[in-house]
Image (cartoon, rainbow, N blue to C red; front, side, top):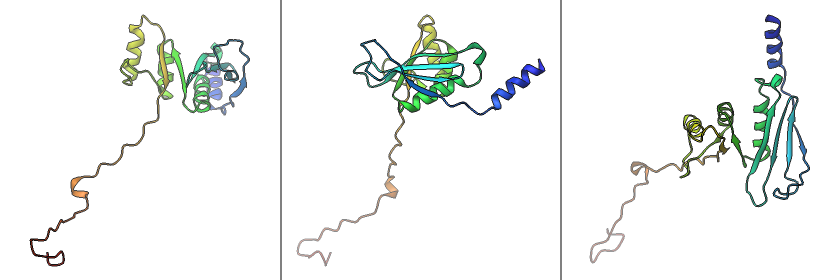
Length: 171
C-alpha cells in the first residue's frame, strides 16, 4: 500500500503533460467544416465541434481512462478547451462529479429565465431531471460595474442668477 501511495504522490508531483490539439475529420454535415478538434493528454481525450450557425463550441466527449483518473487530466483538457474557444463552449454534465468539475472551472448552468445557478442548485436541477445530464456553459466574464458618484463627491457648482437690472459681474 505504501508503495502505491508513493507512486501516486510522484505522479501528482510530476509536471503536467502538455495537451495536444488535433483536427478531427467529421462527415457529419451538422458541424462546421474544420471545427472538430480533439484535445488529448496521456490517458484522456476531449472532443469538441461547432454546429453550423452556432456561436459556441459543444463538448462532444470527455473521457479519462480509469487508471488515469484523479490526476487532474480532465481539468487540464477542459481548461485547454475553454481557453482554445475563448470561453465560447458548452457541454452536458452527466453526473455530480462532472457538474463539480465544470463548476470549478467556471462553467455554469442557467435557469429558464437566465439566472445563473449555484453549484447546489445545478446538482439539484440535474437530480430533478431524473438524473439526466444538465447543460453547462462557460460563464460570460462579468464586466466591472461603473463606480457610482455619490452626491457628496460631485463637484460643487453655484448658479448665480443676476437680479433685474444687475449685470453678471454685479451678481
